[in-house]
Image (cartoon, helix red, strand yellow):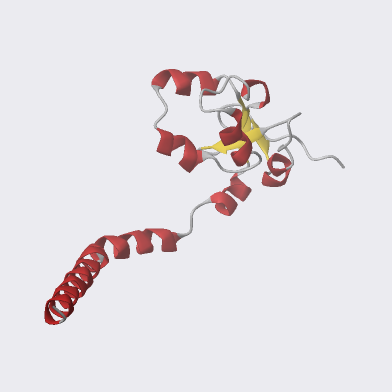
Length: 138
């Protein structure tokens, strides 16, 4: 028996992650941004950032890359015209960032001093030792 096509509350078709991952060729390039599925195949050549950046994300989650670039409102409006569906809710956990990333980020912020202070102290000690040894040899 065939499975009935499910639709999101927005009326968009749900796609499984496995279906999206297969769409990573020049003939068909799909990406996921905020759980929406975009067919960017016809947009590859027009993309201001070059088609390579879209091709790198093909078949996968491009949310972080899309947000890191800081796309304009016009770019977001244009992207909305390329939406063909949504990632199925059962597959969303597969592309979600692990919780440990947040913990790591917090740890990195608290260790900022050690990331800068220790190397600075080492550089200062090496400089002092160099000056002491070069002065003694003269």
